[in-house]
Length: 88
Image 1 (tube, rainbow, N blue to C red):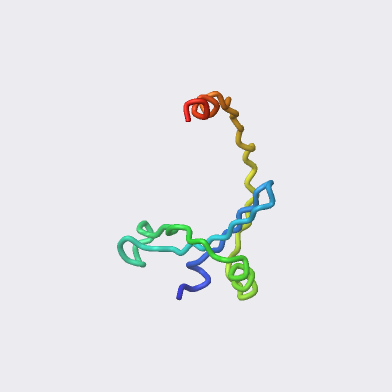
Image 2 (cartoon, rainbow, N blue to C red; image 1 turned 135 degrees about the horizontal axis):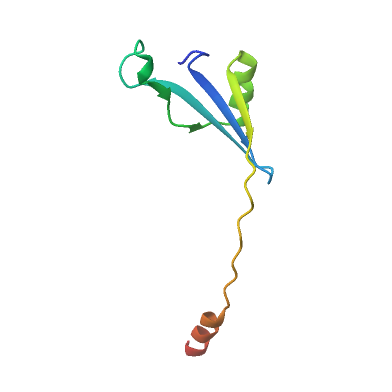
């Protein structure tokens, strides 16, 4: 179990209303005394309940609002589908 100083929880909120929750832990590549070897590890998905529980316990929670443009939709004609039906 990591301490409150070595763990942070992330909440990412999107314009669509979706929310994603992650946990990050500090890891070392050498020793804990070598500060240059410390970095945040891989993001691990966690539940909303876990984040809320840990926030009450005093863990750091970082909330970010992600503002990305919506993806473009490309429509393709169904000509190929019609030709397949004629052959079939």
